[in-house]
Length: 351
Image (cartoon, rainbow, N blue to C red):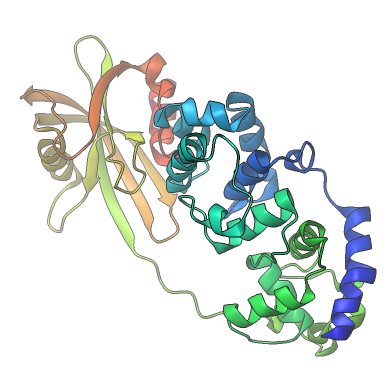
């Protein structure tokens, strides 16, 4: 531990200072900007998150502006990033900070972690980067770096202790960013660039001859695949019916083309007819096929078949949805959707 700890101070931190990538949240660093970036970077690569961060900060340049916005506006700015519960919790937390903390971001780990949507990792990241608190982060990159440095198969609790022990007191922000940067750019999951690594001289995984043996990963479980039917219901004005998902549901608060999961023994058309009756209380007749969208979520894959439809009887009402509205095709993009529904809009626009 002492040798590796010494190398962190004498090798890793100077390497990071000379090689760190330029990122918008690394300049004009404030608790607010750190918070937004950390939530966006979870499950998202830096190059993917950067345009979202820039767009979000332009629309909501301050915590006050975020707290004053509607949830729908926040979701629209988050559209395409996925994990939309983060955006909803972000909005809730901004309102709590505005109402209960006088608009100032809380500066202790305990207060930060009490905010909606903030766990131990995010609290440590914000605390160290924004307030220079001596807190070590443990994300996927850091887990990989530690597992290889120590050639170990330790638990997360044990790895957190290792990170805590290696932490450079008084310089936690640089330490955390250096560890994450090393994992993101050099200590890669496959084909690690060991010859470029500032820690190669003390890396036990490298000395073992097979650094990619660490960390040991459990076999991936087969994830379920579902088939979904959705309707593009049109009226005489050329408008399209869209429904808003309930906040407590997956993708809560987003708008969608109404539909749902195909049940055993159903055709897709029968599925769509049943789902719109259950969701909006309308009887429809399906028409031409529009598009099939394939999309992968973290815990399942989906095949979404979309058909045009007309209302045969009944008037829409929000039974198993939060709201509904009719919009002309040019106005469809004014509200937030999931990536799958955005692909349906693209298909509509091309017709």
